[in-house]
Image 1 (cartoon, each protein chain N blue to C red):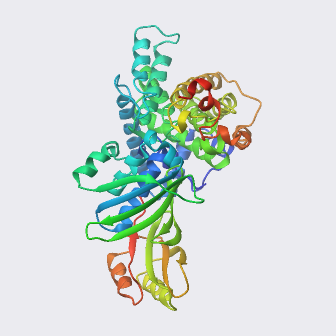
Image 2 (image 1 turned 120 degrees about the vertical axis):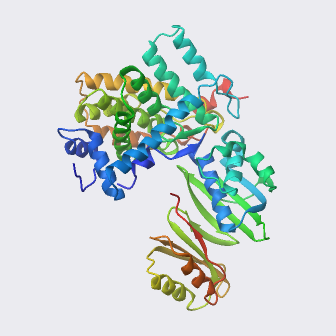
Length: 285
Length: 222
């Protein structure tokens, strides 16, 4: 399929993908933009997936600690609890949570990660994709396609709202990552482009207003736990969208609203480390 | 839209922070490239948020890694103190006393193996992007996101024309250009962003032009 043009909104993306998949459009546009064959884009994205897979392993070590000592080793702790059947959720969701935490902790401990869309929210896509691979047996080629769908959604959010915590709070980082992951999972599960758009809307609605309030200004607490919350939100939105639930709000409107809400968030709650969790009495040492 | 899918899913980087770790590594590497030779001594002064959170973000390690020409995804960033010691680099970190600057600012004094020196001030502006704001005492502004030529020269008539003529004769298109100087008739610097990667021969020809003190090429990050 040839797409000698670009998409500027989710509406356009869904229209262009009619009868096919969002990833087809994103792939076609990127290959056109880079003046390369689609295969080159797929190979480069496979490289990103490979680094993501390594980061899941790297973060799963019991003895790992961040420079501040606040996080590290907790993904291992969670995955053990899941394996022993101690958790509320089953092994699928539990594994997803542990993998998201693992990548986020890998990042906090100066490991190698793929910013997706940012370093602070880097656990959400790998957690979603690799746990779906474990459960449903998708090949890497399908995960690469899902990453393209996610990236297409992320490009639109970056353009129409923000993907920066300093500009738009955590909703712009973990919220965007979760919306990207929701769209990716919907496509993997055989959903339509319209289902993907609904999943994006639902995720962003459910994470609307989330502030960015890192303790000590570090990408650790609550950031790594918000990656866990992000995958759970993404799964919930994907499930609702796949069932045919349609929120009565246009996806592009929700994205723009997220950007507007971000600008209303006071500066103390936009990555300055001055408010929210960062200002809890029990946090000050 | 501007962003590529690989700006959204990517880059591959060492955590934890795109601004405080990846951006810091890019500033260090920019310093190494402006010096044009391996760093022997470095005085690195931090300001604002960089000063407050450098330990937790590994900002110090990332800058030092960049000074050794390591990229943002290089796993050696974590152990850069060790690699710097191995390479015999003398470095000190301290506080930059600035009146008004971007919260993520670094001031560096670098000495290279041959004794070449660079003084620079740069900031990490978000998402791993950086901006150089001062170079050897001159106020400047460039990001390194495109192929960039840095050309210190004497502030005299005809120097800019000579340099741009040279670029034209090699078929190199200039995408953007700015000129900074300290005072009329003193030292000035041209900053040019070019569309293609210039050949070494063009840089040699430019260096031979009268009044051109040096030509430094900073390639765009792949």
